[in-house]
Image (cartoon, rainbow, N blue to C red; front, side):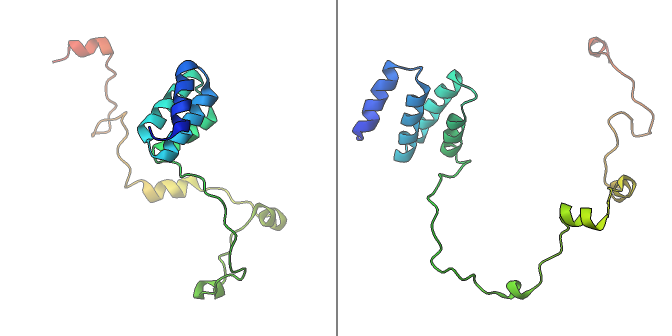
Length: 147
């Protein structure tokens, strides 16, 4: 290890392996240095000691590539929005809960219509055979005696 802080924290974690906060600090530093395997190992150890630790989960997610490293927000250099052809087109009308409540409209989902749209694409139920007759119920103990 070339980073003296990481070497020092590694010794501290070895001396106090149940110190989750110290272990997670080391994991973050290891991840920043590019030592993903060691960071994942320390996160796993922290999660063994405290399975609900949100910080350990976030660091583990970043180490495994699921959560990007948080970046500092940047201020826009040009306060005027870009003008494109789509900016001149009207935005689609999406009813909000307020507009629906004010207009008095109440929409319900039509389950029968939805079923008729997809009934040809659905697979047969597991509870019936190809002929439509229900399949016999077989007890797990009977499975050994079937031919």
